[in-house]
Length: 256
Image (tube, rainbow, N blue to C red):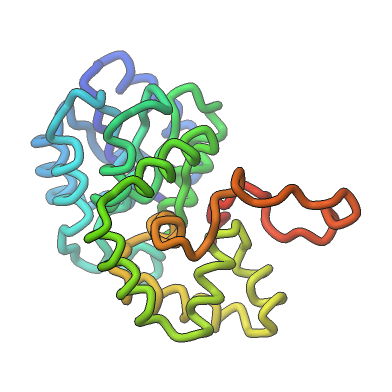
């Protein structure tokens, strides 16, 4: 059972989210918080698998709260079988608009996913499950704005990121490029002729070396360093080539 902490400053919205999530056979809500300070305290005390954070961009503490939550220590669960056992809570952020100016900072702070509030209910449930299992979620409408934002960061940051990129092995660089191109683990394994378990090992090593916590942050890193060009800057494939294209064309990670 995946446990969820709801963070929302509107009582009716919290109730709606709770009712929807608890109607799912594999999700349960263990607590609620109304602001960032409460969210950090509740995440520390309740140790949820996922923190569903739904606060407006004017809340200046949102990024700091995410940073604190994703760095929490956590006791291993008694069962020892949960995929998130012993790890900090995962954070899924709901935002109202794809023009949210804090979206990029939210990802860099350690959020595992960002979903727009107009997402379908089944999309929300699926996103919670994906994040709980260690995957990443990013609304397609946010992709271009986020990538353009991170590409505008200063040259000092770019030099530092490129040094981190140079620390990857040749195979890790190939895996990172494939990941940022939207390939699933299975597709990466097939195209590079390696085992799926080896792909997971490479991804774990990549995240450690570039200082990323989640796959979505690795994708942003690949765009920031110029390793992969954003989808809208790539040449359009010929119709005859489409059947052989891996991934979904969005440039987003599709799960583990």
